[in-house]
Length: 204
Image (cartoon, rainbow, N blue to C red; front, side, top):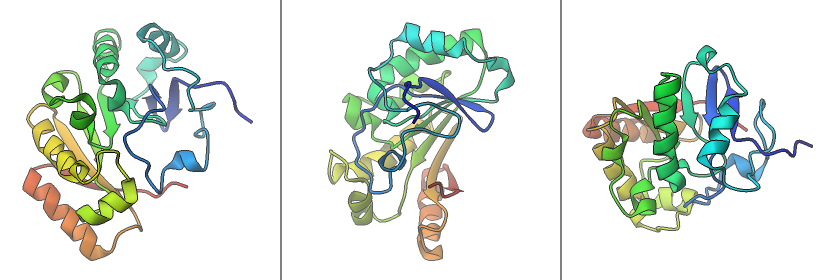
């Protein structure tokens, strides 16, 4: 059983950064309900939230130049530690000059009680937001956000605002989980927002 906690880990040819266990959602489909690690990591359950210095040290274990992208994504919602995301992103840009992505539930404005998109300018290259479904009611049933019915509209508003400051904004759903009609509705949402729609592969 893998036990040692993981701050930075490899997925495909990207480096993922795991900053927190906290999340504003309790998604019915969350991977952390069925596993404690990914293929190339030890446990993603953090024994404590890492400091900036600990994240820097974790990067030093990798040949960062050989990876394509740095991705904030772990077992919690990255924007729960948005201020640390900004600090680490500045370090990554200055030290490694790599593209940076945040994988998020899109509830960062609610979590941080402010509009966070303007602070991403010139630091974050891609924001990938879990749309999950085009239907607000079904969204609430699936993600069970602590923010309740505000969460769906807040997520879409964040995507719209992020488009002003981040070069690539993507809304995602998971292959095989929606009907073609639902996927078409997701595409329309993305078209209306001016962002990219991506159907990502199912992972179990």
